Each structure stands twice: as structure tokens, then as C-alpha cells.
Amino acid sequence: MNKKAHQIAGVAASELSLAMHHDFLILHWKYIPVACFGAYIIGKIISIIPDLIEPAKWNHRKFFHSWFVLICCISLLVASYMKTPTFHGYYMIADITLTAMAAGYASHLLLDAVTPAGLPII
Figure 1 (cartoon, rainbow, N blue to C red):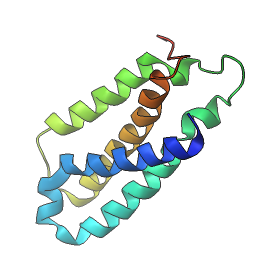
Figure 2 (figure 1 turned 180 degrees about the horizontal axis):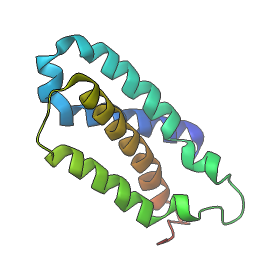
Figure 3 (figure 1 turned 90 degrees about the vertical axis):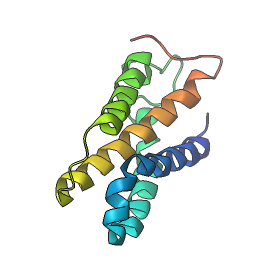
Figure 4 (figure 1 turned 45 degrees about the vertical axis):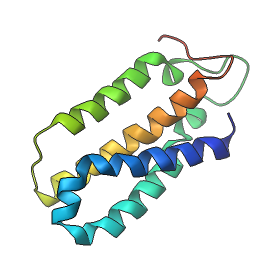
């Protein structure tokens, strides 16, 4: 996949990850524009991190392009979703940021998983 496709998917995944925190964002509506802009920036940057860590060369997909890392990202998203919400401002902002980062990174790996080269297990 190319950089632009990864960024588009990363932004979409990061923005969708905000839905996990809808209770906090509804109660604190003034954070919605900041959260949306933050998720946009995070998704755009984080979605290309795996290719920055492991540049595109022959067989460049190593640990940071693996199913193990993808499962870790998805586990983080599930844990964030299932966690009892605590509406303490800075903790929730950190949680929203971490969720957007995991979603952006996972989107990169999911796109790479459907290519012919696929992803290594570890």
C-alpha cells in the first residue's frame, strides 16, 4: 500500500475510535473539536510509523509489521472500550489519544495484511 492510502485509513480509524469515548465527549462537548482534530493528526502520523520504522525494502516487514503487534493494538482498543469510564479530564484525554494511536497503527497493519506479501506472525 502507498503512503496516502495508509494515511486515509489511519485518519478514518482514529476518528472512528472517538466513538468509544462518546460518553465523555457528550458530557464534555467542548472537547469534541479538539478530539476530532487530534484524532486527524494522530491518524495521519501514526498510520505511516510502521513504514518509517521499517523502510520499504525487499522483505521489509519484520516485527513492527507483524500479526503480534496487530493483536496488541486490537487488544488495547478492546481494553479501552471495555474499561469503566472515568471522567477525569487528563486521564480521558490520554486514553482517547492512546486509542486513536492504536487505531491508526492497526489500520496500517490491516491494509498491509491484505496485500500479497501479507504480515509475518512475529
